[in-house]
Amino acid sequence: MVKKTIIISGTPGSGKTTIAKLLAKKTKAKLIDINKFAINKKLIVGFDKKFKSKIIDIKKLSKYLQKEIRKIKQVILEGHLGCELKLKADYVIILRLNPKKLFERLKKRNYSKLKIKENLMAEALDYCTILAQKNFKKSKIIEIDCTNKNAKDISDLIYRIVFLDKKYKIKKISWIEQIEEIEKI
Image 1 (cartoon, helix red, strand yellow):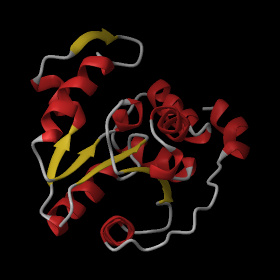
Image 2 (cartoon, rainbow, N blue to C red):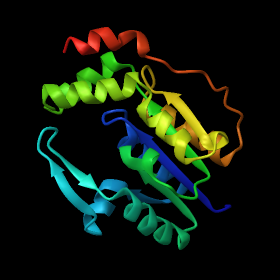
Image 3 (tube, rainbow, N blue to C red):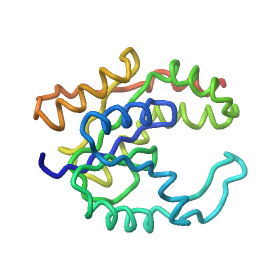
């Protein structure tokens, strides 16, 4: 198998971890949880009290990850920060999820109202896609709507695209019409 570096990104709750684990198992690729990697390398530079989240040094994270992935033949990097990194990657997969479905998932995780709203806005405003386009060649970015699909089917689709060179018809995914609803949360 040819060396591949795959980044799986998307808003929290989009299915990144589950899908990345399935894909890593199928391909025998090393799976790196970007957030855990940042914590282990002590790249936390602060804490956002409002959103109750760690602030990570993205520049250093990119540098450390690039050094790490150089040594690995098949690697999958998983995490919402994946779209913000500056790395050499073969594919950047952005998992998208209808904000209505995302709301349900984040509520089950007991996210605060503020954090739910922030993540729904990020999804509706294409945050991960826009950042990925800023940091990677457009030809390397693939958006997948996960709304009515199960994790195994999505993992299999990514496998076919990445490892079997299956052509994937790219469709524009947009939830912008849901902004007004999200603002009411």
